[in-house]
Amino acid sequence: MTPATPGPAASDPGRRLSTVDGLAQLSFLIQRTLERRAAEHDLSLIQTRLLGVLRDRQPTMNELARLLDLDKSSVTGLVDRAQRRGLVVRVPSTEDRRSFTVSLTSEGRSLITRAAAGFEADVAAMLEFLPLADQEALSALISQVLVSYAAGHGVDLFATEPGPTSPAP
Image (cartoon, rainbow, N blue to C red; front, side, top):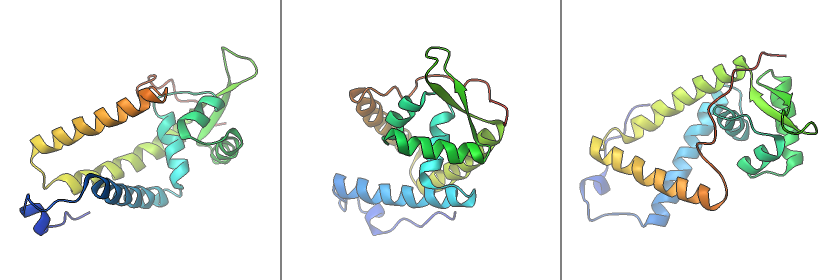
């Protein structure tokens, strides 16, 4: 992605969007970029979110529903489709025989790693006109907002380390 030349608002610190408008427009830009990267790998946005969640945790189906903010039946269908594609596997929970945990297969891990690398490059290109100190400040502010929001909603963004990659079925 070729970086855009900063427009007049970037060169004039007095011209700013409101926080709400700025965040809304930024979220649209980020969503569009992520959707494009997902489509390159034949993934929907929600499938990309699923694989992203599974990079660093092996949740139960109920936990996955909470992390994705979806109802359990939607998560079941989502996991079924990813499993048929060889991207995830369900494993009986060691804590509760009635439930299953979901983890990435090596193919799923490889796919999300490639998609994430492209997305990261796109976002880095969007931010490259900012001085490094501003990029670091932005990262710190984003982290504060997300960690606080997640903690207030009972989600640990840094829950677990990834387990061993499960073999493809």
